[in-house]
Length: 112
Length: 112
Image 1 (cartoon, each protein chain N blue to C red):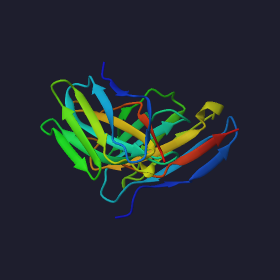
Image 2: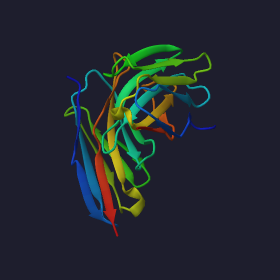
Image 3: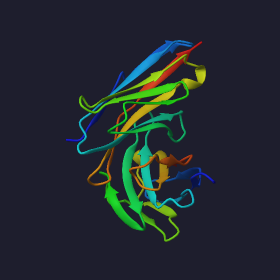
């Protein structure tokens, strides 16, 4: 069964610290993997999209990694800011029938 | 380019009524997807339309329906509203569902 699991479910860190969010998937056949940031009450915003051949992709202080062999991805946030407080969602695209498999998200809280 | 727009932004209905939500995708995008998000929950996929055809459907009852017009604008209809239908309804557009989706601000529906 196609699944995307994210950990931790929630995370609290101090402003200025780094953190890493995890995403494990069992989606097959694989097309791409995306990370979205969703502020409370708003629509998700794309951070990165990675295909099978890409290992790392950065977007400012956000760096996503992908290990297609182990079917794992991570999102690393450097020097966190209060505005990074949001839910971070991992989404995997399945290539045979245009389906997107959504993770439940990690709720990140940055404290001053 | 203008972003994805959704109307109305807020809506209050009573049980048993029906409601129609509208989504205008980014110009040139042919794929439109709809999602439901209840408080504290992840996004639940409703359906995806591509060139006026429903390509995928989530696990929602038949009370939830949609359509897409030739200009790619999409509508979602919910009949016989229930209290549990209270949620944020998000629309996302893309060139293809395999590419980055761009989300609208959502319609917040409250069923009393």
